[in-house]
Image (tube, rainbow, N blue to C red; front, side):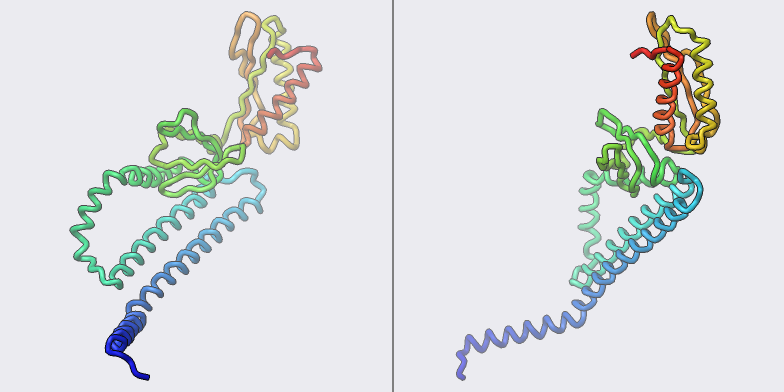
Length: 293
């Protein structure tokens, strides 16, 4: 078979390129593949270790007799999530730099352009840096952790974000509200945190009654409701002490509100409040005392 001069040149060029690519693949190319594969495997390993640690923390809580997580357990859970995020970020950045070097980019030659680019991006990345710094202090100061019920005021948002903390990183906090909606809050935009499940909580209910009602008798009924609730086998584990009657909280011409409060385990104030309202309504109805609306 006879080949023309142009075809011979093309074939020679193809063979040369193929030889060069094969040589590169055996040297730098193989290293790049190994680096990327190693980064992927390391990421999966770090995620596996994190999930194993968090599962052990959760298993320790579920296997115990306590009804709520301890502050230390919530902090360890959040810390495991944050550390994994930081380690993976550093690993991916280092692998990316090594890949660039294998591709022929001189890192020393990129110092000056990187400085200019960093200065330019610095103005646009201020919020990211702010998020990371805010997340660092959120974790170190133990303002909240995994499983806490929190109310977060966010810059520029009218209503606060409220829900259960499901994930915490240095940049964002993920909440799930009672409706099942997931709320993602950048840490740098948090201006106020109300932790509703730290150490202990308080259930407070206001009982509206007519202003002409016998206040002494109503106080006696509410005291009896508190004693019965504290003796109840289902409610007693949630209460830290016996519910108390604080007295008249608000008074108008035709109505007064009597406040009843109870210290509860963290996060259990909502369950206790609902149960106390049912018991108070039933007790007042038995006494022939009607609540006003």
